[in-house]
Length: 171
Image (cartoon, rainbow, N blue to C red; front, side, top):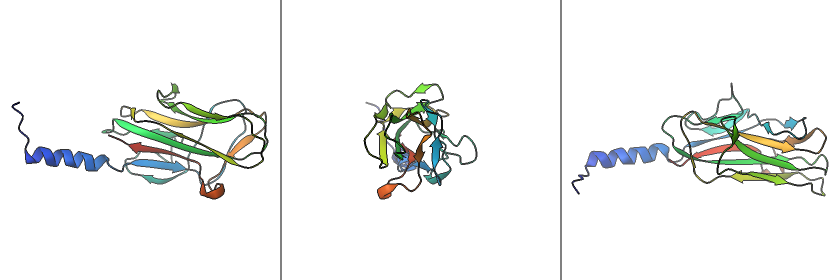
């Protein structure tokens, strides 16, 4: 076919694979996040990072965002929210929002109707690999419509669970 594979090409491909393998970020909060407005999708802000290998998250500005850096073309998103059950009325939910304009294709949302317990509960959302461009950004949003100030998301959740927003580089 006229294609010659050189050792430098193999080394170059190998270097790219090593550069992307295991990269991503995990943002979380060091204190509770409470949504006082009922019935509105609201971005969750993140005050800390467990890790951030390529500068996806900034704890100083736009703390609600995971921003895609140059050189990354596909990612997976993961989010978990622990909801305190301050009351048993209404629906709670989480979703991923892209570039401040809409729900990102392939991400969906997860909603849980009212439950008859006063115990905390968690919602988890993950995506398949998403095609993205440098500068795209995602937020994780929270919903509750109980009619009351509600939805405390804690950094130290029951049974080791935690509220977080994460990105994993696929390529």
